[in-house]
Image: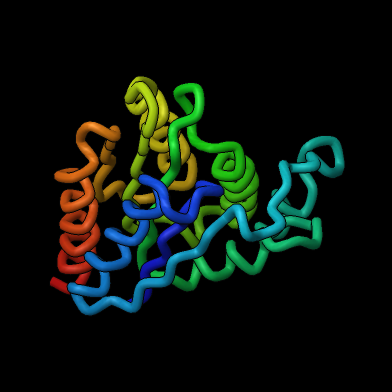
Amino acid sequence: MRVIVLHTSPNDDGLTASLAEAAVAGANAAGAEAEMVKLTALDIPSCRQCNNGWGMCRTEGRCGYSDDFNPLREKLWAADAWVLVTPVYFGEPSEIAKSFMDRLRRCNVGAKGEGLAEKPVIGVAAAGGSGRGTATCLLALDRFYGHINAQVADLITVTRRSAEYKREAVRAAAQAMVEAMQA
């Protein structure tokens, strides 16, 4: 069983990174092969809205632009489950997370439900500053998961004040997601 954990912060040693590591640890503890993918290390720019807004994403279920997006999309489609961990910026997912989500949503529409439909997912919104904005960030993740017909296993908010115990919650959620899939 393969689980992909998407880490969407430029900070390698911050709150978001520690939560992504916790998700990997939880999935591994349940016997999955978990892989962390750092989106900020990849070339995934915003959607270019080819052909009047609907290019190959609509007709073939893949992006017509050549960058790191399609290989990652294929990796997610081949995985059994995935986790998206994002910092909260202005009440929303990080910019790289939003770019990725926008492009993935379009490709999933073009794939006509294949690929990501009914795959278990976890969304984690990590606010390191004031702690505000986690609920609206999770709302954006929940809407996105609905657009791609994913099966939400959990949505978790984390602030710097709750990080210690929520890190364990993220680990436990990833482990429980894999265990439920194995049952």
